[in-house]
Image (tube, rainbow, N blue to C red; front, side, top):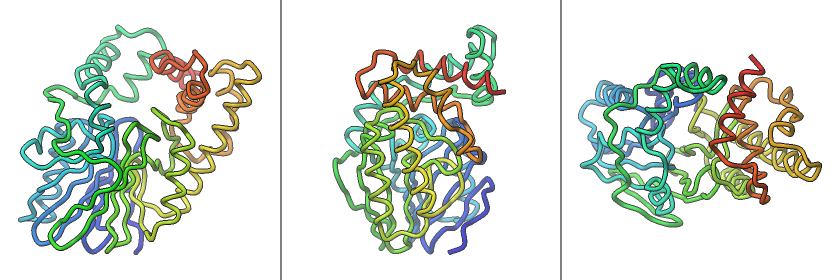
Length: 318
């Protein structure tokens, strides 16, 4: 099937499948997915704010009148894939058990709302203030009630949507603690959540990075042709291979940097970003090298401090 254009809105990617895209896919602008059959709908991920999730719901109603969303699957616990869950609180919301446990312990929407408000109001320090204001300052996170999955699983699970069978495959911990792939075998379509960032640097929140590489290898061996990433345009397996190569490169670079006694920022500054010049969000290299450092036992891998360093790295490249 021809890949749809990378424009905002609902795009058909298979007989029973749709991708809801949010360009440019940067911080907070994630994709969602939809599987439909016999009037039933399974939604893959909600969005970062209630307003954005309402837009998604309205787009589905306009394009597919009469379709009822009966099930939501959260591919992982990041807010840009879960904060809209409350709009479907009376439906079945599925996530991996690891994802649900991590969500319960993760910073709430109020934490991120306060961070954005401090940045917009000029209360955050220096580069961090500017970074958060410019990258996330347009998001209104008010009114969000954290709504975790009400149905969990580990490993694999099959879900019915009308006559269609949807396969849920846990591949985390990788990007986060409990990442899940959503496969629609009849259409040859795979929704990856943030196991795939297409056209941008990913973020390694959890790791180990080796598990993420294994998840990419799993996808490469699957009988799918169309891949809907968590961020970026609808794509195919070549994008998965390129991301796998990037993760391998980051892991090798970080290990060499740590052996050489480099700080995370110093190692990030020496990473060959020019080889990924067509990717957005290069500042995430700081978080990614920091995650590998953390995995290797280094003490300078604290996420809060790395986020400040990420902002400083971003400011230095403007």
